[in-house]
Amino acid sequence: MARRLCGEDNYLAALLAVAGHGLPDVTRAFPVAPLSDASWVALLAAAKAHRVLGQLRTAVDAGVLPVTDGQRQQARGAHRAVLLRVLSLEQHLVALHDLLGEVECRVLKGSSYAHLDYPEPALRSFIDLDLLFRPTDVGRAVEVLSAAGFTRILAEPRPGFDERFDKGTTLRGNGFEIDLHRTFVLGPWGVRVNIDELWDAGEEFTVGGRTLVALSATNRFLHACYHAALGDWPLRLGSLRDVAQLLPHSSDVLDRAQAWGVQAVVAAAVADATRLLGLPTTSPLQGWAASYAPTRREEHWLGLHTQATKTFAAQAIATLPVLPGFRDRAAYLRALILPDSRYTAGRHASALARFRFGVREALRGRGKSAD
Image (tube, rainbow, N blue to C red; front, side):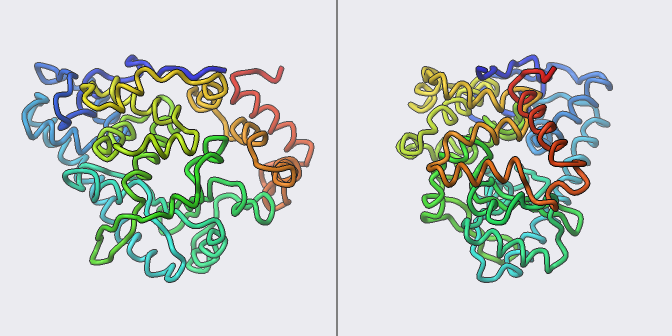
């Protein structure tokens, strides 16, 4: 299974122009007249889904996106609503920082990108919180948050799985979700992340009078590439915009990408951001990305994420061969095939039903049928 290229036809033409607005010398053209009511409603909904309402509003306010008076008010109202959500989440982020106390964490995506990598924080919206923990601290973080009233969405397959194998886990409470990460993504690309290097010198930023710590600029760029290339399908334009915003911090990213063996992820993200946002090719990294030829295995691993039918089961199965030793592989496989009853409760009627479901999902995620 090869990686699919995300085509421009997955997006409204005006949305591509909006997503790149404010970046130097982008080539995407805006409409020359206000859109029809139906086309405007579609654009507004798409900008919200792709998290580029900030760019939409600034394009409207700058006059580069022609709109009616009513459309202008709708753009401002939609952006104001998402900013209220962001402000609420940042209040929760500060409270979580205090709640976790000595359990060290790094802020991922969202607020860290907004404050460190965008010219104005209001240009980067988000709908949940993402925090990185050391593998040995994930369990403690879950305990602290559970005691505070948060509920884990999915139980751990077996004790120790979070710390050893998983991307992380998600908790829900107080009207929002928190993703607790130990690495960037599930699957082979997540195994390749050097987790120790994620904890090198981070970068501080301030929210609500609290000093929080993000990843270093190099690691933020790598994470942006992971999220852009391996996240939503079709690709989320807001994630590609993160890659574009962080390009100025990418001077030494290739050294780390090569050390981890994740050049294909970086190349895919940079090439897609350049192509879909209409960026000029002005950096050596963009030229390198355009000419990068992934290996057959890299194509397969990327392909697990570049289809509408992608599944966690297919990504989990692909993880098995890249785990470092027999004992890890055996423990991982046991957790997948024979998880604890808490993990299957309410989801599968029996171990056999669980196994059949896993086979179907794994095949579906590889673009195949179980029939």
